[in-house]
Length: 409
Image (cartoon, rainbow, N blue to C red; front, side, top):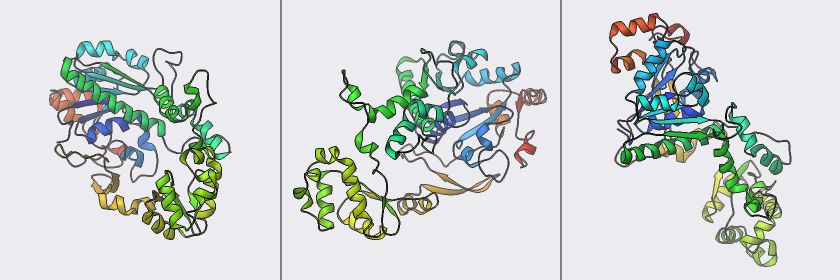
């Protein structure tokens, strides 16, 4: 089941950006075959785990996939990939396009093999610019997309990266949209196509949607930047016993907030608070005054007061308290299940839902080469052929890698 039931995806991605995109496709019901090198996806090694090469980031970026370990340096291994592509609907990769071309898996070669294939590449830079051949990582793209600069302005401190792989995940989600659009177009034309998803251009557009500001005009009206988001005072408010996240934004919310704290006259007494435009012009002062007000009550008191006044607010969670958030508990966002090799693991479900095409229960993140034999059999390989490929080192099954996995197949 799932809205993408019947779609076969060959996933030649690793680390985070590509695997996050292909996991989303798998969550929606696609059959995702993850092609890994014999040493496995690098991200398998990140973070604590019960067994080698089954770390938490890998577990939470590679569910709903089947793992096939193939040595692309061997001609027989490449032949296996080409056979898998012959009846696939989507190929997703995240190495530089020239690397795919060197393997003989450039778009023209693959399209000749399977004209219906959607050929999706996630890489650093658009291929028509001088950065085309450069490698790229999340940190580099954050820097190029101005995020550390904006954080420096807002914090009045040194430039810093956002402490999550924001670029990887945003580009991954963007790729999902592009892939689905290409699949829809294929229904009309019968043909697949190449889809390029460059990190740099995607993230510059994402960030500057907020911060291009007066640079949207020629000549410019200012130096860019969205003042409210860049205010030094835009941060969780300290309360008498902790912190709270609140946003008193429009006129109705300000009226309700000031009424609740007994200061309704402020909108008439101080022009800086009188309208949305005035508050925006004096945002540092307004946020600073709110910070002083919030220090006067406890977090629990503010939660009750703001909810009663219909002012948007949220608790400021840490990495442990968010697991017990009552809304996430009620919606079943976090789930625990028994992984066949890793024991009890916690996962996060896909936030979207469908009324008709409900995806089936989750397939756990695979061990390296766990599904090699299964996938090759489905591709038409006989038992003798598979044994020969394993013996030659062209492919690897979980049986031949059990020692590295720390778990018998």
